[in-house]
Length: 362
Image 1 (cartoon, rainbow, N blue to C red):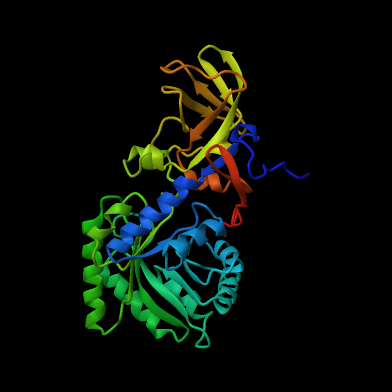
Image 2 (image 1 turned 45 degrees about the vertical axis):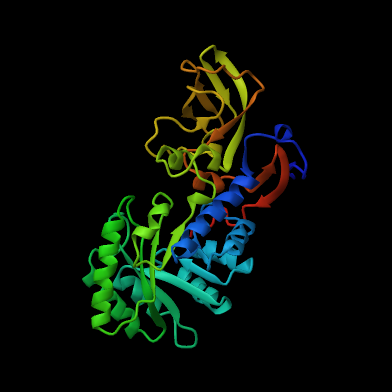
């Protein structure tokens, strides 16, 4: 069966729902704004493509001035290598013979591949896979407050840098962090201390990579960082809006949904369940923001239904057959739920793009 994807020029209100739609002008503006900010502050930009997973958007980001791309998994990077991208950073500890074999093959066919490591075990696996024919660039991941992966101290970062340099098939390229929002001071301190320790051992640290969309426009507060990584900024979402990191006019993604039932005056049901909106709450008590119906709350999701509480509506109530626009709580996950994305301008479809890296989670 072939899904009836809309052709260019199709009105948005004529496409099947549920469907994520991307505003071309907002997308372009988000890309330009972010790149211009980092250019102004002399920092390289390496967008994280996990948000969109679409090569065409990554090309827009490179055309705007990005130096390369950031992927999260080996399989995701393979998709973008197939699409012609040749400067890729994978920000994940890569372990196991199967993944390491694929990583070596990927390194052989693109110009610049980098990975991260935060343990001797990860480095040992990389060292046993790569050789001097084409060494692999490795960054040490540091925990500067994000409390996810990363070495806990600058001293630990030095130890791993020395292990990387001792491996003939590896090259120490620098340090990397994914900090907590508001953590610029701690990031700067950690980078500075680590650079001092490395310098004392005559170890160069050309790349100091920080990241995150929530603190994107505070990147200049970490002067020691040479590059920044971010993904969500390209579409933005409800979480970014709540935090004040974007305005309503910066929201490039919406999920179109149709009201399929009005069982009671205070309840509506949409055709977008957890398979379209995701069940991510990110601190919210409901599952997305319905534009144009202030006070409406998506209070529960099943796989194919979204139940909306209309009791607090202050601006009218949608009826059966109405199409509504939902701002998802978390846009990155929505991208991984659909085979294609529909783009539009002025209410008309401009293009349909394959989400080429959908499902690439290993």
